[in-house]
Structure formats: structure tokens, C-alpha cells
Image (cartoon, rainbow, N blue to C red; front, top):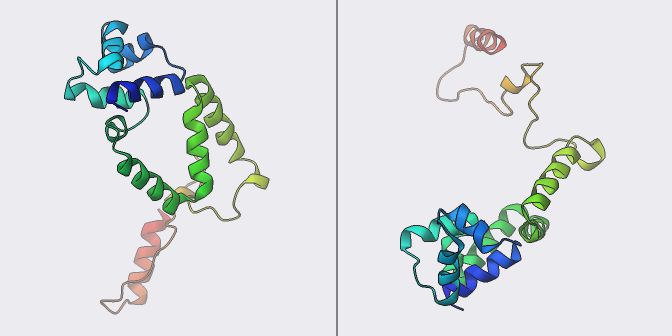
Length: 160
């Protein structure tokens, strides 16, 4: 598959018109996108990144470099697990309106105790408290002997 076919396929997956893609990628008319999709003409290197961003993908993916796609998916899977990979795959199938709704729903779910982890790695910020200033992990220096006076100073500093 050449770059024009890949762009067309991705645009159609997102339910985006040629005109919409042209606007998002900085072209003046849809005819520029049509030329690119038909035979790959009129696509300067500088526009590949803009089109990739508009299509919510990578320039490597548009170029058809599947190894890069596989590497990216393996990286996502190793960092976040198979569930995150499935979520991303489904998220990419949604149009812009659907993606906004999905983000809204996930944002709501993180505030419902039955759906959240007991001790999340990321602590929620509470604007009415200063708890966000508390370090999640801290330890005493080991390169010097820490005195009681030094501990009191540090405690006073962090209590401010």
C-alpha cells in the first residue's frame, strides 16, 4: 500500500472528509488531499507530520513502516498491558465526538470508588488541601549522619 492509500484508509477509519483533513493539515482545499490519496503527488515531506497529526497517527505509520507500528504496540503493551492496547484500538475507531464522549466517561469513572484502585500510583490533586505537596516517597540522606536538628528543620520546611 502506498502513502496515498494509507492516508485515505486512515481518514475513512476516522470518518473524516477530505475537506476536514485538508483544514486540519493546513491545506487550502480538499483537492490537495484528493491528489495525495490518488497517487501520492503533492505531498512534501514537511506535510507528512501535519497529516499524521490530523489523522492521529505517526509519520512512520503513514509511510507504511509496519515494524515501527509493531514496536509501538509492543511498547504500549509492555507498559500498560493488553487492556490499554484494546482501549487505544477502540478509541482510534471513534470519530472526534465519540472520543470526547469516551474521555468524559473515563474521567467520570475515576471518581467512582468501585472502579478505582485502592491505592492509585498517581495521587489525586485536591485544591482545598495541600496534600498534593506531600511526597509519595522520601528517604533520609545516607551520605552523612543526619542529626535530630536536621530532621526538625526538614519537617518544619515541609510543613510550611
